[in-house]
Length: 187
Ligand SMILES: NC(=O)c1ccc[n+]([C@@H]2O[C@H](COP(=O)([O-])OP(=O)(O)OC[C@H]3O[C@@H](n4cnc5c(N)ncnc54)[C@H](OP(=O)(O)O)[C@@H]3O)[C@@H](O)[C@H]2O)c1
Image (cartoon, rainbow, N blue to C red; front, side, top):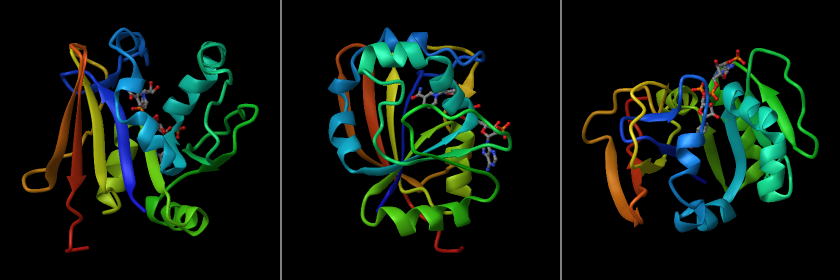
């Protein structure tokens, strides 16, 4: 079982604009040209922060029009939030807060050998990294810059922490970088 942060970023390291828009991303190309179709087959659960979940809530009609469902995932999903948020119909959601490690243990006991997808945002992926629980980054770098926005991964991961496994060009709009994350043996 691996913990994988799979996300798309601007060239200057943002996964959304300051006001949580992803319009810049949708203009870049099809996710089907990425490793997503293979990746999602091995995902046992999704993990996300509340801003990412609220994006799904606020764009339910758009998501349903594009995928046939306001919640296009069959896997159970853990949403980190200190607030009470509405449920999306048809979604198997577990609301949690606080430390990462106990939540990870709870997920691990349920999903057996499948992977955990950290959908976003970057700070939550960083919390998994801080807890020494992040195994891979799979990042589609878009051919755009945003100057400001929500950070891809607001942590300092110096060499040799990240090891580049593969690079895949997705036309002119994106390149997918796949990294393994060296877990610290000190913890
Ligand atoms: N480009 C991409 O591939 C991609 C991927 C994913 C997301 N996105 C977008 O990027 C943006 C991400 O927003 P974001 O950076 O603000 O991140 P986020 O992780 O989605 O949301 C952050 C919020 O989650 C809650 N949270 C995080 N860790 C917590 C913890 N341990 N315990 C309790 N609550 C916790 C906190 O809010 P509360 O406690 O107030 O609820 C925190 O402010 C969204 O617009 C999303 O749609 C883009």
